[in-house]
Amino acid sequence: MDRLDEVRLFVAVAEARSFAAAARRIGVSPAQASKAIARLEDRLSARLLNRTTRDVSLTDTGRAYLERARSLVDEFDALETSVRDVSGPRGLLKVTAPMSFGSVELECVILEFARAYPEVSLEVSLSDRVTNLVEEGYDVAVRITRMADSSLVARKLGEARVVTCAAPDYLQREGRPMEPSELAHREAILDLNLADPTLWSFGRGAARVDVRVHGRLRLSNAEACLAAARYGFGVARAPAFAAAEDLRAGRLSTLLCDFEPEPMPIYAVYPHARHLSAKVRVFVDHLARHFSGTPRWEQGWT
Image: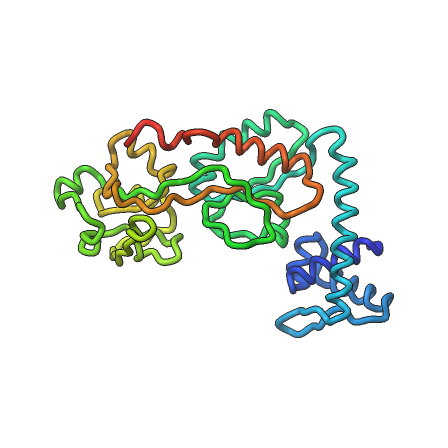
């Protein structure tokens, strides 16, 4: 491991506050990471990190060193990337996306990209877990959320409506709710991916109203909730892209359309870098072109 590798590893440890996490990100063992940082500190005759059994933190010297070290690593990476990109996008592109959106909407987009850019290898992970792009080595993430302040760069791709729906036979049996408050007395199908599965919000701005719902089925993704709704177990909520096929086919009907909550924005996010690699740039552009205009999932139903 040369000096630049040691500096790069120090930056990773400082950002992750963990030798194990930094080692995974760089591709070495935790023991190698610890020894490399010890060599760096010996060479500098300075302690850069405070180590405890639970945490790693920067010393004052380490904080000052990190600022310069991060700039050095960024400059070196930008230099190498600029040389590699002369011949066009190439190399491994690691992408992560939510399970439902990835399986329903991204599959064909990614395959089209792979056909258009044969020099780019793709590693795609579909997970509803919010990944740490820097720590886990991802180049791009697709996220459906309201972005908080972040060091990540976010490019908006579109919006996903949240629809409330039920099977026609359920509505014939139980009646169609006309106000959100009526759902407090209905059987709801709860999506465990939500921060609070039992709290459903309706309306926008000052007209927003929260309804506390209940139900005996608690399921781990939108597809499972929609399947339960098709079987007549109750009322479900899901992103429009997940429910669109059932709505088009008449297997489900939308409810309370006048009380829809604010749609959720869809973003492509990637770590900030002064020199964005060609593979990331063309992939994000590809996503933006595909999702421009009225999305496919909004067509063919009302």
